[in-house]
Length: 148
Image 1 (cartoon, rainbow, N blue to C red):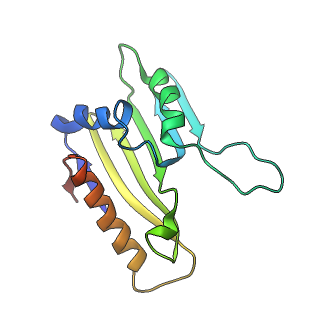
Image 2: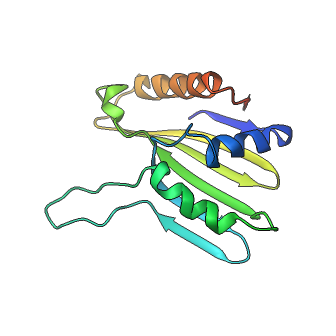
């Protein structure tokens, strides 16, 4: 697991990437929780027929709804977003799921990575590749992060 933070001075820029730019649009969203004037919890799971496998909304689909909830004079006290890579097997053949968890609280954002694997592997190869990919993704998009 990789942990990193977005410092207070960079939070506004990060929120631009999250709510205005297309930076995270292609990621699936597995869940959103928002602590504002009340508590909101959103599942990213799409309705399905009995014979279909579970599918999830992309951030592009869900972003307008989340933006509408947090819009107003009072910013949310806390917010958590769970993003997932849409095709994890393209990164590594043993990857079943690849996550970026983002927690906003007190003018700071903390992010962690997580992986799900198809079969147990002591080498941490999936974790290592995903952590490297995430660092590169943030760097490529000009998002400043502090590791640790």
